[in-house]
Length: 238
Image (cartoon, rainbow, N blue to C red; front, side):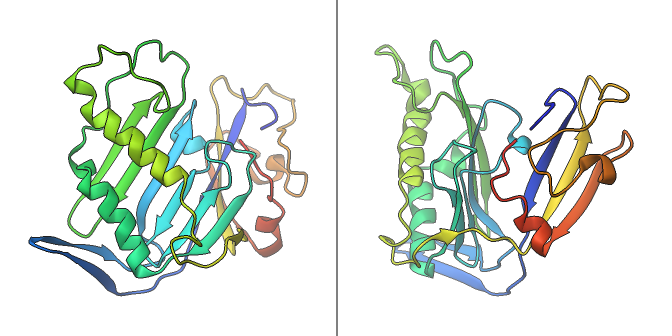
């Protein structure tokens, strides 16, 4: 965003609260239970070559069934879409991940050969009783023929990422997707290293908000953008 060596901004999507718990019976297995709340993240996936905090998620599924996702996963210029899934569809996605053993995957997956400068995929899953996060480089790469058992979870992760990237809310019985329109956003403005050169303007693509006005100093600043201010950031990309 503008002078990337000086500053960056991170947008965090905010939501309202709703209280209840949803469960799913899986035969003899323990039921899957999750917080049925609009502020509870059940599944989140990010793809980035930079810090995961500096990008919009490819997909975020909340406990109330709201799913917010990039139309083109991994493309930060892609429109954000929003849809609502029914409880059974939410449970089906959690079951897909849990049945593959995702909650037992190690955080840092082995790196395929020749994976230099390839995107890193971050995947997070949370239920009422457990949570796990995984980081893996070059998930879309073809594993070498001699890749051993240490890549078993990586192979499963590849399949799961493909499934998540191909999610069609309508096919899952959800509402038709629409352009995401946030009620508010939390904007973090933080100095980068090296710091901004004295006297040079803080630049980014959104002219509706001037960073120099809200972050004149060298400290991290958090600003809540409401209504039209949040909508003015449509098309934002880091």
